[in-house]
Amino acid sequence: DTVKAIKLSQQAWEVYENSNCQAVYNSWNTGSIRGLMAINCHTRMTKQRTHELWLNYLTYMDSTPPVLPEPIRD
Image 1 (tube, rainbow, N blue to C red):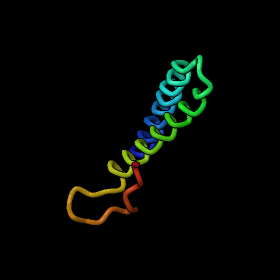
Image 2: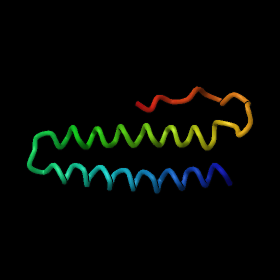
Image 3: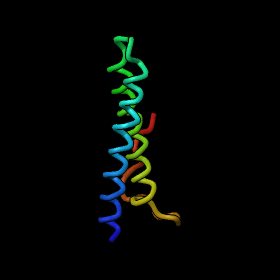
């Protein structure tokens, strides 16, 4: 059940991410920088999502070390 729920949430997140970054791209419609702004949006959101998945599914509430090291979120 958990794997199915994660897959469904990932699909929904991908739709949101694409819509959000398309809006960023559209907001820069008169500038040559719009492609870079959209790529930055995708990169930033992917890093946030990666950290969220790590936090929710690869860490423990007690002092047990996480399954994998914390992803970089710069």
